[in-house]
Image (cartoon, helix red, strand yellow):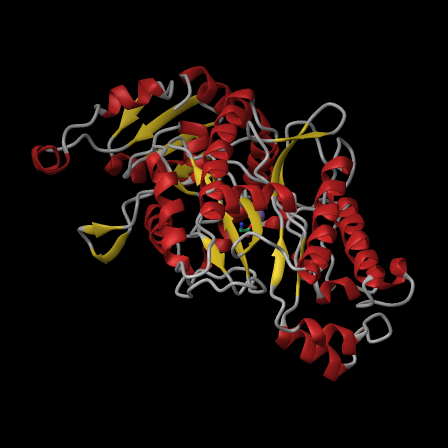
Length: 464
Ligand code: GLY
Ligand code: MN
């Protein structure tokens, strides 16, 4: 965790953004996998981690705005915990690490919150996304868990988004570490990308790299030679020459910061002409987006210009027709690029998604599109210095989507369906990098860019 002044500053900044009341930040408990004693990897709630830094189960933090106090709630370990799990620092010692002035036991939390309710003061909490957290909040506040959404604090959501969006130097250093581990994961995946190898062998190897870096993966590895499936977590195929393998994977550091990269590489290292033509378009869209992203530019516009590059490239290959601006305005590119250009990244790989993308990625000026494809853009608002984002354009040939659009004549004036059908067994290509917005533009995160040109990829696969 960072030094205590980081957490003190963050809590003081949060206090200033809310007029009154009490902020409740619940940490996570262990989550059972198949029985209570056999749990998933413990992952702390990211808001609790941001304001208190402690990655242990069974804690809650309360920031009292009027009193100007912070309190950490949790129970010291008993002798049985110590026998089975080893001893941990006391609550007092943990609170000191986070710069928190007082501690109390978990049973005192309900007493405190009930007092706040009797005083007619607001309890601010963020949208809970785990069932256990919903039940805990319902019990603490004596409200119906079904109606909890009515009590969520939009002021708190907006304040947290404001603070967590602009990454501090200490956070950028952690994200860089996650990116460097991501580099090792992807280069290893490329090295292993040979016909006859099972996808699960590669997925397992790169997950091991994340674990061996004193962290974990930032989300379950997406890796498949069925590369047209956007998020495929099944790894049972044996790689075949002529296919392309997509790997979308990143690391999470011990402190909780993420990376998220995608590379698409030909099995055995050499693209055929058809693959290379499409690959070059995606690479051009990726590079253009990185050249364009800068303070004050709406990311929505960067997304649209990536879509235009994709549409132009596909027109040059005879897959699209007509005026490119009109095609993109009508969403015709989304047959091939049916997702957004990227998302924020930080303590969550889709940073703050649990708070609601409407608050994280959009605002009064830039509202989410309802058009198929563009609607999946998670982040559209104007960029600011120290925002961290992914840049991840792609082109996919999804047989079911192609068949639907052709049958329903969707955007048929912009699509050459006869030509597109020649690509039905092509798969898909996505290239994802991680950037931080600087004073005048952006820079790639990570010490080295993961090999991305066809020659760089061929080198990694062929010399391995
Ligand atoms: N890397 C997975 C995603 O961005 O959804
Ligand atoms: Mn991503």
